[in-house]
Image: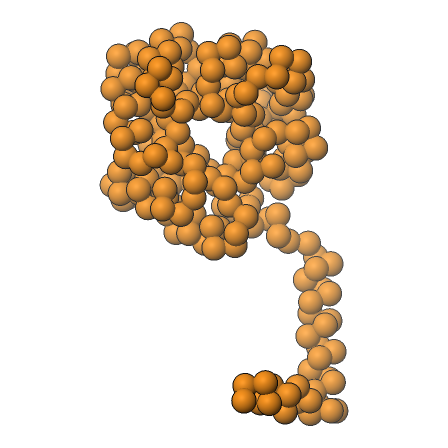
Length: 228
């Protein structure tokens, strides 16, 4: 599974990328606007940190989406253009795909929509799982249904599990076989944490300090020799 950050904050991307397990970014105008940095500048910086950056159009008509999609794709080769799940969007997908532009269809909430996305040849499909949970529906059930349909026909469209709210969402998406999980930075941080890890590290360091107090810094002489 690939990990994407869902963010408009370049520094969050930089911190996560430094750990060597970040594959990409999903962002949108709302997330970018919160950061107070010019959209183009932020996208270019993100593209320098990861291999895939999803930038979203704001137009709702095909002509506008095509123009915005071309503009976004011109920013950097790493850009994937996000287009909303709507008939006008599919008109835009047809044109942009013919020009070699990769598409992520976003705001997907049903297997039928996901089937259409794959038929259109999109690069990613983004089912919004947490938003379904918010209305007492089952986001993970949707994800499983999409993956089942795609496997039946060997569609090349990659399933990008979106709107993930906590670390168990990420784990469940991985168990179902999602290609990608995109998450806020706080959820990405949660993946590293476990109380037993914290306790184990604390106990290890305490034991080491006790040993040093009794034995002295037994590593120091060897360290000095190795430097010579």
